Length: 134
Image (cartoon, rainbow, N blue to C red):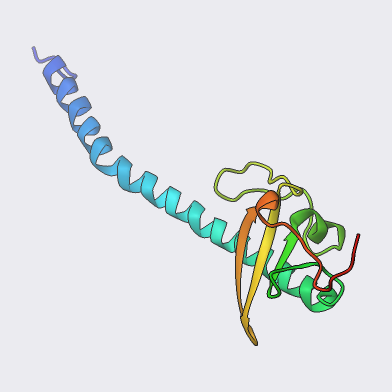
């Protein structure tokens, strides 16, 4: 009489094979997930950059400048002027970005040529373009 079913050796073989497949396949899958988060983070920076450029176009004459060609605008200012919507989320981690602790630093290189960086507000001290006293 024949018994139906699998032997212990066959079951262990299947478990080992599935384990090997997981070891080989898991790192590329995790890498792909991390890369997609980085791309989303770049997209978030593009949104912040576009909001900064729009804000500077509208309020550049009145807004404080650092070093003559660098605008430092807190994310809170962009939210207050309706250029961004609160709460701001970090695309990489999903954490909320502190609107007052972070600023967009827009450097004007030449006409229609700008660079943008997300920096700590304390590293982007604002000074007036003109020599007004406070």
